[in-house]
Length: 113
Image 1 (tube, helix red, strand yellow):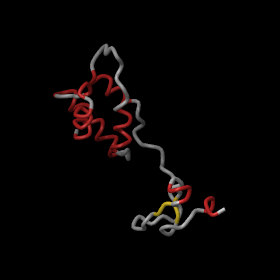
Image 2: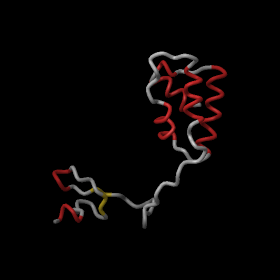
Image 3: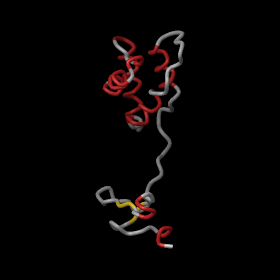
């Protein structure tokens, strides 16, 4: 429900209340339990509304949520990743490279060449 309330705060035309809010919140909770992240669902829901709304914002958001598969596609695992490890970015190309590197202030292969 917090995700939908925040969406309504950011875009007042998308604000829901009462039964539509409760119905869409139940759908959101199911998708979150299935592995979707709040950011992914916010991205789906926050697409611009049509200029002319034929039914209701609740119906539009319900249709968007219904189109989301119950379980997201598996995210590619990062080989050898350690959740506690610090991640560093290549400072090459005047700080614009940003490729992951093992040590701070070290250059990636492309920037070393």
